View (cartoon, rainbow, N blue to C red):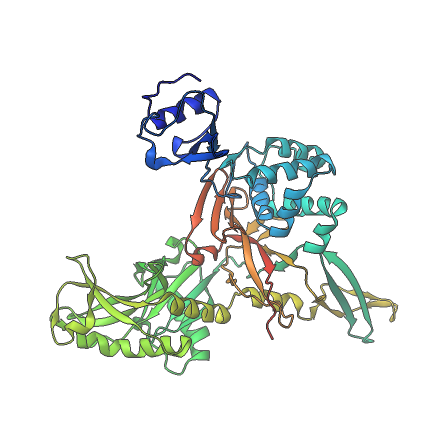
Length: 564
């Protein structure tokens, strides 16, 4: 390549890239090296000398140069193009791609196995090469449709079903797959007449967990309620009320059927505010005469608020809970009552004492900072400095805590949530009445019976859970949107000393007839979480975003540590 000695280094890089037909986003990714014949080594020239002339850098005639691509692409962080209703495949692939043991196996695979497995192995090698941020998995998809005819139609399919087909096909050819994913469940049926027991054990690669279903009635509607008590404590209720009722009738149903059975100090209806809360911050209050038919969704937050002595001269002010290290709000707010005018910091601080005590009772001794914000200036101001001063134009009170305090608080609430992963597993494993009549081999007749399912320990290194959100019956199909609370770290399935961490979440957004899949997965090389939405990939910085009502498949990986 003939160039002038007065050419700048960056221009030499550009010409070399062009002549070699190399694809790079920017020449910043290119490292140029020159061979030093005296020392018999390559001398790299980085970006700091790009504006120097070649003769200034001592690059002589007939020099040997080498071009090295310094990719800033993280291996495994690779989007997949949607080639037409293939998001269900893309998301299943992204889930399995982030199972460390499985991907390591396919990255090292050299000998051919079968066309589909070979294509999957090649796809993994491309996704984890660090050379691609986006791929079109067309060769693999074509072989999928050839191998599994049910996926030949150009329509949306069930991502969990596809993942199950793929794992099942792999395990017949790759022994590691059986060791990684397959467990056994033991099912027993006990006759209630003669007490005889029949038992069978079968392999599973997914743990299918039914979600709680409320019987649909034309005149009733079920709401999932987060009830925020005066001191900030949170309780969870499922409340059924008239479908054509109002917010007031929902509040009354909560009092009649939930609070009366659990609390001694029952607030009046005028001391409960209904609201839609987003991101633990944005609050859209509902009026008590609003019709429930106007409300979209079945999630609702009800706040117990202090009694107003003088409603004409008092107003409610939200108190927010802020994780200062992640700059996010970690729990729903509460409401304080204050005078409209001439409010002093001391008036608010006295109400905050019980709230701070509640936080301490949950997480132990901790340090909190209390601020207030105004409608007319953006910065936060310390409440302590305004205890005996009038606070004008107050918009909100903010309690700042450390990230460790916020995480402890969230974890404690995982354990108390009504619809938690632990509760689903307990319900799945408990003894229950057998549907229909049981043909007892001992009684030689149809009887009644109970059935129970048990997990066979030890569980495999990878546990895949299906949250059974989709309901199919003879008359209609439906989807359950109930939020299931599942831990991100250190989950126990009941096996002593063995804990599991979440590594992937496959989500389904939308309805059964019209939906879209997105995967959240943890890159096992850099331990960062990413959202994989077909060709769009985004890093997730706050793990609280991983817990969503759209979760459909959860993948847990066994920790390498064993606790006593």
